[in-house]
Length: 269
Image 1: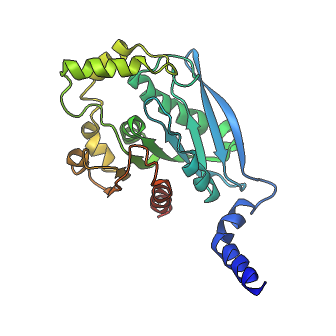
Image 2: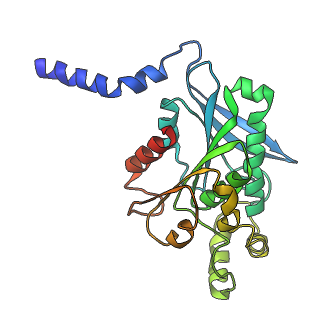
Image 3: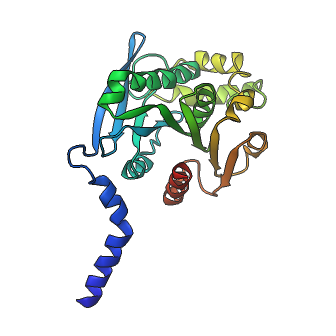
């Protein structure tokens, strides 16, 4: 019985901080909310996870990949426990959001999402600090985060893992393009014209190269985590970047806790 009491005390000491943070203000508890955001004539689906407390908070926006099976909601829960708001959304044309799925649209979508939560009304309603966003992206979402975050003064930190730099390297391998087109056509959860999507990438390959935004990214704090060294060449050209290698698969399936720990520690510094 004594050993059981000691074990219980240790558990409370280890996890007491997060329990206290979650329940620190019963008048303003942690909440979750489905949110619809209009972009032009289209509506996109968003999901807000809002931390406890009356004060406005730094907010992390999650950017999923192609097609977006990994949503990083395990990370979102931990970030909220540590006092940050988290927004997840589906780009136009993805997973029920209206519109066409295009890389150019994805870049515009994240700007529109930040604009939505930066209005006076929504900043107050959701307790969001409108000039303090963090972008967190996976795979294609990593590239979206770096490019869009480079241009936006509201973004101070950008963290990505397994990033896809769509503008880096050759784009004239016809065999690879055809294989890519077949893959895109298999994604029934996307409202996508594979030819339009690929033409957008080719026509804007310089703009979509993360290194084209190197100067602007030097003013941000960057965390890039990868499962292998395929991106190392271009990552090493970026300034103000912490680069971490964790050997695992593309979604960090067996390294989720390590990923969450490193991301939260970096964000909290």
